[in-house]
Amino acid sequence: MQLAVNAINTVELWHEISQGRDMDRLEEVLAQNCVFMSPVVHTPQQGRRLTRAYLTAAFGVFNNSFRYVKEVVTSQHAVLEFICDLDGIAINGVDIMTFDEAGKIVEFKVMVRPLKAVNLLHVKMKTMLESSEGKKDVS
Image (tube, rainbow, N blue to C red; front, top):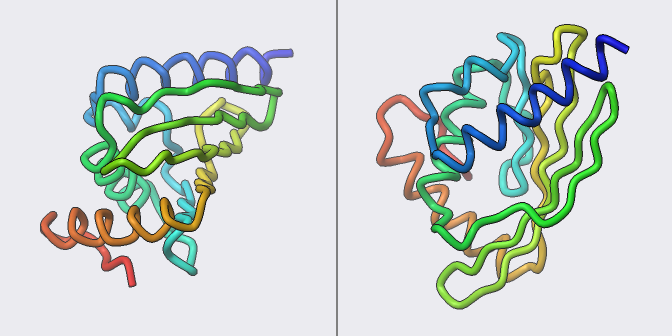
């Protein structure tokens, strides 16, 4: 039961962080060994530093229309569906989180549709990451 409480607490913290766009608080929810899976990069990004870089870039790309519309949370996973309008393109996606026993996120996977949205995000994320010193390319 403690595992479920930890996951719920982490999702609540995630909502606070994402709504406030407070990327300085990401360490509160990300495990050191967290893996980030991007919809536009074919290799998993290993570690909290890279996960933080990608999440920070994503919040730099998404505007105030970004919001979660559905969520399913279990003791080990959460799926949060989001929508956002970016440059006139309706983006629909999900953030899929996997938690460790302490409730920290050990895997953060993002899936996005439609293809126009994926292509737009690829361009915008690449620009954002390249402008951030020391961040990995999105090619």
